[in-house]
Length: 194
Image (cartoon, rainbow, N blue to C red):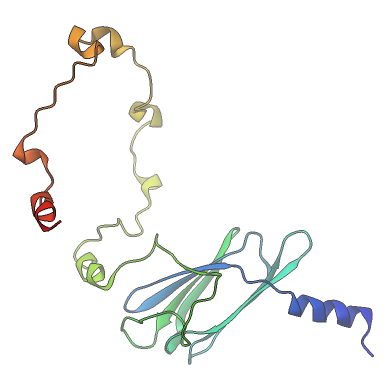
């Protein structure tokens, strides 16, 4: 016969939730971000054939969370890394073979809790371009750049320049001259195709 503690453990296993999970890939790695603030008792397992397991609890009632899925292909466990933060758990999974996966999971379909991480996503064609200079600024930490005082660049600050406007400008007499050079490159071609 099951006791009270056995019932509680069985209930927590049956009622575990799936935290929102984001993913993105490159040809050699997969980024998996599990969004779970204040995660406790975190357990991560990654196996070479691609099995990914995560469990943790969160909240004042220690709600259990769990993820268990098979990744699309084999991975290199030794070169993969995990980081547990205050708001999420990040896992950098190194692929065993450098190639683009057609999806994250081995089986078809997509769980409701799994989403694309558009902040980290790079298309296959864009990855080749970023090898010669990352158009998305890569991992640059802007806080280390000495950009001066933030107040110097406040575009919303009222500096009283309204008094120096021309009479025509105050009445909204804005005349905009269009020139061929003001349209973005390729704009004419896109309009011609439409």
